[in-house]
Length: 156
Ligand SMILES: Nc1nc2c(ncn2[C@@H]2O[C@H](COP(=O)(O)OP(=O)(O)O)[C@@H](O)[C@H]2O)c(=O)[nH]1
Ligand SMILES: [Mg+2]
Image 1: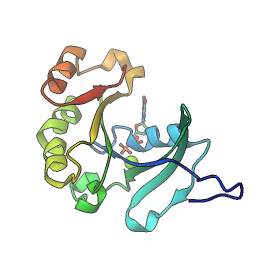
Image 2 (image 1 turned 60 degrees about the vertical axis):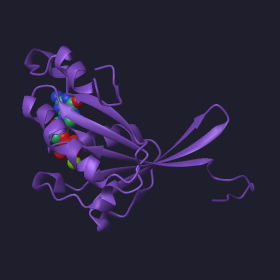
Image 3 (image 1 turned 90 degrees about the vertical axis):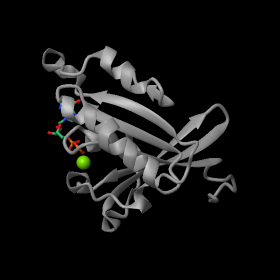
């Protein structure tokens, strides 16, 4: 906190996670979201951690966005990855159905097990929509996954 002007650096700090199978595009999403303004922190703790500042209305938000360093391949994310997250972005590849079914079969269970914040907001993102001709997960199916789970869906 604190800057040279005496104004606080931010009003709210949110921890946001990226979750999903290896290769779905989590790191690419993080890069495109934060490429203009980010501090690159803590590669040593086995996660990629980037910071993004946003202003919404009069409030300054500091988003700490956590990405794995590839451990999701071995399903060995630790509880510290999930701890205290206010937001979880669940990512699948629209051309690979297994990456979609694994969100409910595997990743949602991990979240239930490790997330310490019952009120955390979940968001579903179907990535690689530029490969529309290879789409393997219909939009109807996507809505079925979301019903029953409190979740936002991105417009893809
Ligand atoms: N066609 C296409 N490829 C993508 C997209 N996003 C990521 N990729 C590619 O998918 C591969 C895996 O991406 P990466 O971000 O490393 O996935 P991660 O393992 O989930 O972090 C890379 O070769 C990316 O270039 C996308 O929106 N469209
Ligand atoms: Mg990655």
